[in-house]
Amino acid sequence: MFNMLIGLPEGGALSKDRLLEGTETRVIDRLKLGSGDFTELLKLPTLAMPEVAPEGSSDVARVGTLSRISPSGNSYMLQFTPNVNIAPIPVNELLANQDAFDIEQPWGFHRTRLIVKDIDLYRTLLERRQSSETVCPSRKYLNFPDGPTDENLVVVMMPFSREFEPVWETIQHTVFDVGLNCDRADSIWAEDAIMDDIVGLLWRARIVITDYTSHNANVFYETGIAHTLGRQCIPLTQATDEIPFDLKHLRTLKYETSDIGLKQLKLELGVRIRNILRTS
Image (cartoon, rainbow, N blue to C red; front, side, top):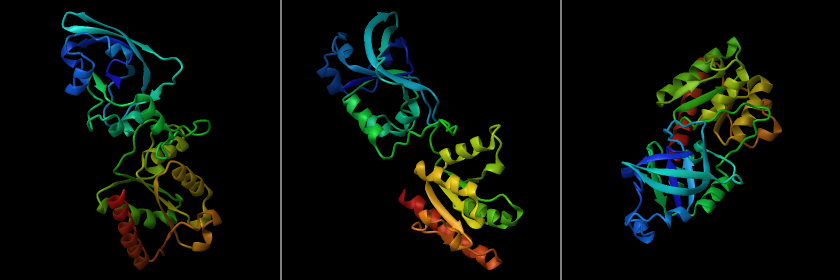
């Protein structure tokens, strides 16, 4: 078992009606908390974190212990002591694994309270860290942001030259037709450095469309980032001989830039996107 302290990452005053809110009755009975004796509660490890909404946060949670729970008027004063030997945990990592902590979706982390969970905290954290679905990229060279994936965002990585505008328009129309949003780096300006915008888009994307045409080095670099982040990728090309050897094993949509060719691209791309939405 463990205590999950939400909204008081450093301890503090907690309304009495929020103490044990959401805790199962069998857990309360097992720990003999009904009498107001918190001795057993103080023996449990504690995960303390700020409130976090579904869109995520750059804040962190800490693992430690509750060293004191004392009444103070209509509240309890909680003293939390973090374990200095355990590194802070990004709250977005907890948000991404909400089910593993048995926290209700989607606003379960957005309410100040103390819950006791009948879960092995350390084992759960270790399994989440070791999971192949958890990506912890280095920020040595790239400024990866914090925040969850946008389930409605499709990002396009392609050359920015004028000759690709009909292709870009076709992709946009296809994405919009399936009810998703579509962006590429030149359509936003959120950061001073364009690479930060590109990395931010790849981080948030649910699907990444990459066009290998003209053998653009930037597109291949961005494709590698998308693969590392585990994003669903849809590669395109006008010529299959422009696909590097390391990427030839991945199915690629070949298209032509004629009116008929772009209509065919719209059809095949739409099918691929819908398949991803249905299976992921």
